[in-house]
Structures are given as C-alpha cells and as structure tokens.
Image 1 (cartoon, rainbow, N blue to C red):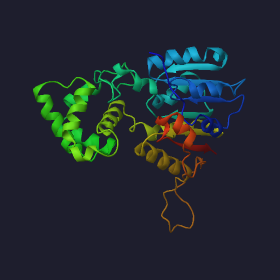
Image 2: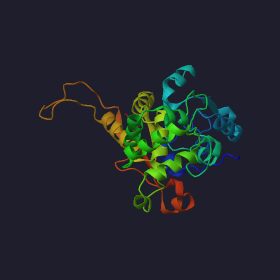
Image 3: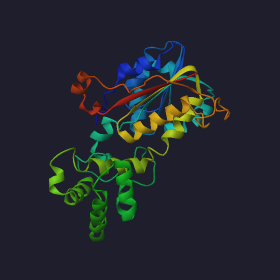
Length: 310
C-alpha cells in the first residue's frame, strides 16, 4: 500500500519552529516525512534528524528525503529515546524539535496493522512491530479490572465497565483475534440508545488499547523535559496532539517548565532555586483552519502548542 499521510498544521509548525538555515532540527515522529521535507527546504547548512519506530515510515521517509541526503540523518527509535539518540549522534544541543502525536493515516489505512475499527484485521496496533506484545494480548490477557481502568483512563469511555465485562465473557468462549470481533463485542456492550449520537462506539476503546500498548502517555511528560533540556537558547519544541489527555500533559508540562517554582504563594521571593527553562509561546493552542479540516478531516482534533527555551 502507498504510504499516504497528510501533514497536519504544516505551515503553522514551520512558522512555530522559527527555523535557522544552519540549525539542527529533530522530527521525532518522522512518519511520511511531510513535516521533515518542509523543514529541509528551510535549511541549507543545517541538519534534520528524523526519528520513527515504524519500519515502513523509515523506508518511505528515506526515499522521500533522498534529495536532502546531505542534510538528513534517520534513526529508527522512539522519540522517548531522544537523549540517547542525540548522544549517539554526538549532538549536545538542537534548535528545534517537532512531535506529531497522531497515528499516521498510513497506519490507520493499512488494515493489517489493526489500528482501525473500520477495517477487519488481526488485533495488533503496535507502532513498533519489534514489540513482543500486541493489542491481542491486552484484550485477551488483561483482567476485567485492568481493561476497565485503561478504557476509563485513556479512552474516557463512559461504558468502560460494561465493555470490560463483555470482553471477558466473550473470550471465555474463544480468543478474541480480530478488530471486527472486538468491535462486535463493544457494540453489544454499549446500549443501543448510546450508539445513536457521538463517535463510533469502538473509537474510545481502540484509542485506550493503543495508548496502553504503546505507552504513549507514560513517556510524554519525561520526554518533553528531556527535549527542552537539550534545546539551544531560543530553540523551540512544537507538539501536535489529537486528544485531551495528551494536550493536558503538554499544557501542564510546558507550564511547569516555564514556572517551576514550588515556594508557597505567601513567600515574598523564591527560595526553592528552581529556574524557568523558557516560555510558552502559545497561550492557547493553534488549531487547524476550516480549509484544512475540509481538506483533511482527520486534522479536526489537532492542537499545536509551542515552547521556547530561554
């Protein structure tokens, strides 16, 4: 299948990175290289480091960035390994980093990856296919309580308890192996009246399983702090999120980096010694335009937040 992915908030990210022609920039979620290719057009003596854990993305991005080969290094890794990747490349500071936390259109459209509740496929959902466990393990091996917890925590699914009960009951008869088998169970669990409005009834459950499997939220706060610690003065971190849990972590972590003081409010001066790492550029997140949403409906829930190192 052709690797299709429309870069979300492309121009806004390029503007947000405030690119220097001789700077070092990192695309921590390389994907189809849409953002990276645009960054490369703005650097003539600089360097673009592309990081992705998906083997297909690495292959496609390498081909699409071939014309910029003198200014590009591509690494197969997770952006949570940012510090290690920079150490291995012997790079101390960078001028900008971009993270697009959405699942790529290619991963959704490639049925066999098992990310989509709209296509029948083996329950997989691994962003890094070297990973030993898949969504199938979570669905068939987690306890009812664990399933309920992840659906409530990561999917904000109001019917999490009922869905967990139905999953556990169904797998007593046979192992749940495919996306459509899981979708059918979810549809039976969610009352008919609740299925009339809102998103697809399986959307939140699939999101929760994907986040749990790929440790998406666990790594986010620490990774943001790691990245900011390696930004050069004036360097920027741009993060695109697609749901409220991610956005909340980004917003709160940026705020803490800007104002880390833990002194009681009544203290006249700061005595904790914690210094600000920089400033939040986006008081409110940047959202896609109406035109972009019309051209790419998957951009609808995207939010871009930017932090600048002092």
